[in-house]
Amino acid sequence: MAGTTTMLGEETRTGSAGAAARLAEAADELAAEGRYEQAYQHLRTAVRLLTASGIDELERLRREHAEAREQSRRDSLTSIYNRRYLDEHLTALLGDGTVHNPKGVSVAFVDADHFKQINDRFGHRFGDRVLQHLAEQLALDLPPGGFCARYGGEEFALVLPGCDIASAVRTCEAVRHRIDVHDWAALDPALRVTVSIGVAHGVGPTTSVEQLVDAADTLLYAAKHSGRNAVAYRDERTGLVRLAGAAAARRAIVQPA
Image (cartoon, rainbow, N blue to C red; front, side, top):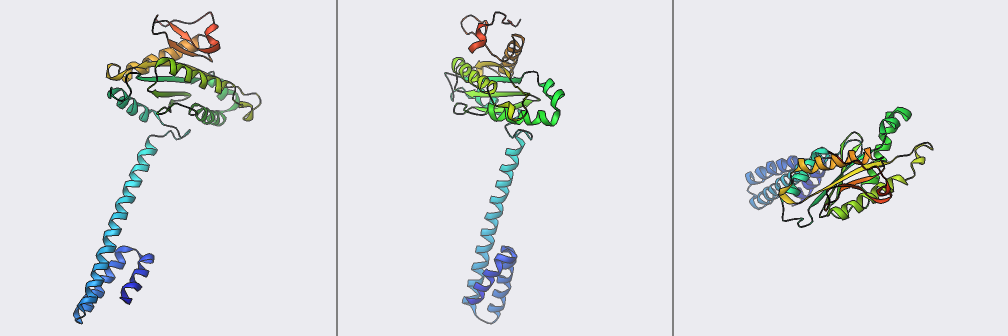
């Protein structure tokens, strides 16, 4: 068995397949000499090495596949989820009416106010840093199962499974306030960033992804047209668009057609 131990040591340097091949060759030589017990031990060790190598290779391929799949769902700039993941996950959430009912799913669209002015004044590289900081703030303190995704440009989406419209509005108002009071001066003393948010709600398969996204997008623009730095939602009792928090006191709240 000393020869087997030596070859096992070589395996760490040359790989399982190479060590197994050498063990098989040695087994042939031992068998030719009539040393059948030692030949058997060599072959048994070779099989064990090849089996372990195959399992390790399979695990490596599975791990690389999982990592590639995860990367394909991430936004390259901000590292949060991208639109592809958003579409896939929303479809799954709305398609399974047994998981989150009766509260359904809330979706909020978030847009950085006057972001073009930030790019024009500070440059696009600086604007990218702002988006990275904004994504970090958006992803903080979301309810269980909630996530943030970059929809495109300076527009993001918050998905809040199991949240009715009232709790979703509270969450979004907390997000808006957190961004409003964030220390943006750490990036530049002249910088201030606010966001407008539109939040919509749907329940189970009776609501399509397109309907929910369109509703949130419409409410986002209602928030912008009503003075920005606000959360807009639709009152389920009256059907009218309302603003949350301090913005609720504004007189001009745009009602979408």
